[in-house]
Length: 367
Image (tube, rainbow, N blue to C red; front, side, top):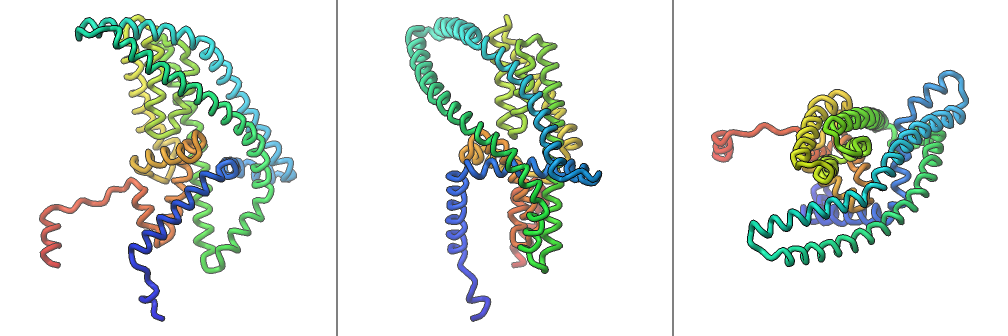
């Protein structure tokens, strides 16, 4: 049988691809409680690996080096968490008062709008009351889901350190497994891909951490200058949400604008907040991301948004944070495997040269 007879029609290839994609998405969704902790552990292990190897070079036992590295990491996360929780608790205690002020402001605006458009204010109030009831019902369901998520989160928090320790400890076995799995013919190629994946993840996450610190400092400073209440918690939240491409930035600026509308005597402060955040975002996009995050993988905006939405649909909040590193790894793999290079090009942001109209007509005519 010749090689031409083995070639499948295009529609068969598309069908196989779609069936495989659906099966993969179903697997990722139903096995998320197993997959999410492992992915987080792999990413953290890649970041912590240079520190462990550095300590091992000084004749420190590998187990002790891993435990010491994980302990330092835990202390940094715990210190950040303590500051964040203390600020969040203050914000939560004042939330009812903010809601009351916002309701009063809303009622006043309703009355003004009714007078201007010559409408019955009661109808508008009835619509607001109905909508408010639906929002409260949705919020109650969301609270239940949040409690369930936090319960699962505690289990994940216990699993991730265990996985990190095991991955770091059995790192030589895992590397040797990948080497043997690839075969002698492709060992050099696979070794290059694995090395680049480690480099990309390390640079991306370390740069992301530095970016978050800088963004939190700039956001908090801007809010303090404007005299916005809860500047610290809002600035930290904005830095965390900034990790989520495009969507996170919109949510991050909406919260301080709402607080400004409620707590300040004029709505102009909300405009000032939006202008300040826009200026900070320009600094982030043009200076912090290119020179500090320093990721070699460039993902175009379309797939950045799509992958965040898919990550949220599959895995919720963890999926939104994991979506970009995973997509960067997928693009890197596609760029190094010849049949997958078109997919790597599709995910990237390199624009091909645009042919002139005359050139297109000449090409068509010549054919």
